[in-house]
Length: 335
Image 1: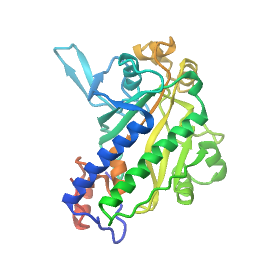
Image 2 (image 1 turned 135 degrees about the vertical axis):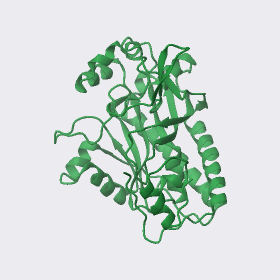
Image 3 (image 1 turned 90 degrees about the vertical axis):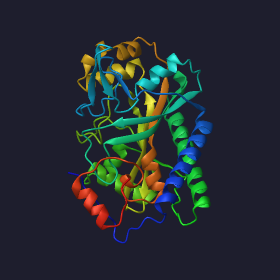
C-alpha cells in the first residue's frame, strides 16, 4: 500500500497542457546542458538484458527483476533495474576515449518498490557514464562533476522560469559536501532519513558521500550494490523540496569500482559468488575502462522544478486505489 502525502493548500500552478510542454522543455534543455558540461553523447540502451550475464543492477540485492523467457534466444530476459553495469561495458564496446562518455534514456520496472509521492514502479532517468583516467579516481574529481551536474539543473530551472514565470523554484548552486559518517556524528540520535532532512533544510543542495559502507554505529546509511560504485567515492545529490518540505534525491552517482575496490566490496557484502559472472571477471582482470557515472531521475527533476507533489503528475504509471482516490479528492491529475 502506498503512502500518500498532500500538502495543505497544494495546487499545481500549470494547466495539464502547459505541464506537458514544460516537461518537454526540461528534458530538452537539461539533456543539452548535461552533454556540454560532461562531454557526453547519446547512445541506445536495452530495456532488458540476459539474466545470466550479471549486467542487471542488483540494487539492494533483494528486489526481484521482471523476468520472461525468450524461446528463440534460449535464455531468460530481465527488465533492467538500471543500467549501472551495462554502461561501463558500453564504454568499452563503443570505444569512448578518456574524458568522453555516454548518456541514455533509461526506462525500468521496479516491481518491489514501496510507493509514495516520490517512488513509482516505473523508473525513468538519464543514465550516464564517462571514461576517466586512473588519476581521476579522487574526491576532488567527484566533487567537480557534482558541481557540473548541479549547474545543469540550475540552468534548466532558469530556462523554465523564463518560459513559465508562475514557477518559482530556484535551486541553490552552492553544494554542501558531507560524508555519511560525518552526518551520523552530527545527528547520532536521528534516523538516516531524518539526518538527510536536517542537513538539506539547512544547506538546500547537498552531496552526501560514501554510501554503502558500514558506519561507526554498525549500520549503513543506505544500501548500495558492491559491484558498481566505489563506496569511498560515491554519493547522492539531495535538494530541499519546498513543496513537500523534505529532502529530495535527484541523483545517485559515483566513481566506479576498480579491481581492488570490487574485490574488497564483494567480500564485505558477502557476494563473492558474483566473481564468476562475465561482467565481474572482466572487471577483476582489468578489461573494462575506469569510469564514473550515475542516474538522474527524469520524473524526479520534473517534480522538483515544476513544484508538483506527486510523481504521478509527471509520469504515467499504476497506483493503488487509496492513492488514486486521494489525488482525485485533492484535484490532482495522475497521468
